[in-house]
Image 1 (tube, rainbow, N blue to C red):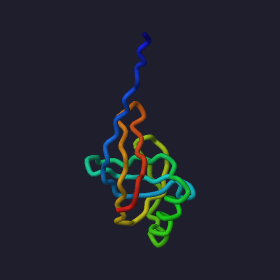
Image 2 (cartoon, helix red, strand yellow):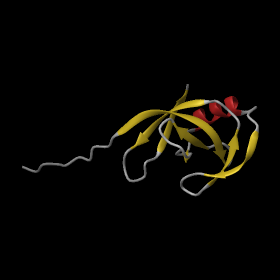
Image 3 (tube, rainbow, N blue to C red):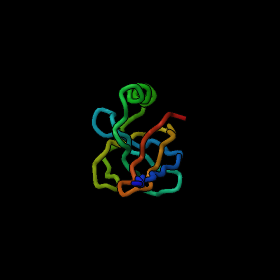
Length: 100
């Protein structure tokens, strides 16, 4: 009898404030509640990107900054909060689930 081993992947939801965008708003710079420096999200799916694009349309840009990964993002003056899945694996990616 062969036993299969399965990887168990864990992710917790967390609230994160949107502090900027990368490129044509397909990725977000997020500041999770428990952190002091922004991290970039995974690419957003098309429907979610469109919804968040509407919510961020009037947010003024406040300059260019660097996330913890070293990538540059355009900072936005907004109070928008999103719910994200924060992976606990090697890449520790934030996957945006929905706007709050």
